[in-house]
Length: 425
Length: 163
Image (cartoon, rainbow over all chains, first blue to last red; front, side, top):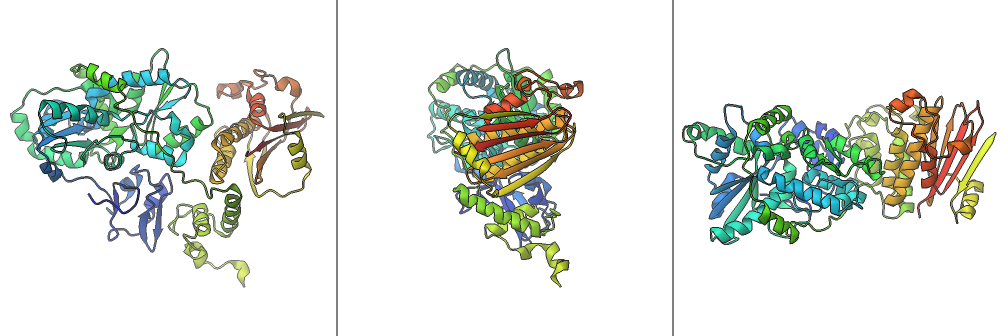
């Protein structure tokens, strides 16, 4: 994959040739990371949290989610795919859960594992963690990489509240990497572990994990791409089914609401929040200690949780309904989690304390920040206040800020340019 | 006319100086607070919080300001016929004033008792009116001042220092 020069890698690519400079992406970016200048959009890698809003809103295929091509698995002798729980909500109901899983295996993997298989373990671990960290309330879920990055840039004071353990797919990676190397007698370099993911934030997390101590995955494939390849071979797979384990009860991980219900118990009160605007509103209230009555908050950037990821093919509500049906009707294999519990107690799944990446401050020195703010307010009074984004900044305020920070000039305002001020003559 | 003063220990001198000085604020932010409009109430304090984040105000102090201004804003919406919130940001402190159009606080000392509330049913149905507003503002402020008269307007102001 094409790694940008920037310190911050993002799984989002802008194709300049396709970009018309329409500013739709500028308006939906929750961290105001996108600007259009000279009719081309560009993303500030420091501010971007990989939420995928811009990918979903672009009508011109100019903002493209980057993920790895399937061919890269050929570089490894033993290949393991780990499938995100939201994947199985993508298929129409004539394609069973087991068949879809078998089809992924037949795309060229030696083994297929599921995020859903560790759900029981995750719930147990999260509850234990909450009880051990009663001084921090509420604990915030860390599974959604876009939420983790959002907290780093906009709510850094909440970083200590994040659940400081790996996300389920990375826990499974750590666990299976050692197990497969040992049992199948393959070396660490020969073993390729790949995630099948519903969103760009997860692709970014594979290529630039936050706080990871050890080697995790070797690539991330988009659900949409894998879905297409599975559809090509599905007829053949349906005619030759093989027995395969599934974990329908664990699929709850794809749905933020159901996940919160699982963690909620007598002494733990959980809240579920999804959609990045709701997440920001809730985090702001957590900052002010208005939600201290909750012990745990599940936060997901996308609608309904991972089923809403921008790399999925199915509508998040339809996918959610299908997954709920599977949970209700399916029989789970209850895996033995004792080995994993031992690794947890040994600290194998710990992540290092996450560092803030503040984007809000105008200056480190409050006096200088105030001076900049005054200048911003001066420019703001000159601007029309339409928040039309035609200049390429999301709002008039953002343009005023860009001007003061030297990234734009008053001439960028299309409205001012067109209608000279009446008091000028 | 009744008056209530609270100044946290050690801040007496600073507060007196600040109140006497005619110094103009570095940044002003004003908001209207319509009566019983709980969809808008809270907007002023949330904008103020955003502004202070941009200035890089320490997160613990930011939280105190956010809580005090939110509680005061809700108070104006819940108990008065509407009013204004005027924030004045200086380089070392913030001074926020809330002025409403009445009907005034009958007994300020009693209003300061945690749990005491005169909120009506509408306000309580919306989940407000627990009687913790004023005590919460006091708890988070370095100085707080209320001037009120039954049947007339109320002024509530607080000062919080950045360090």
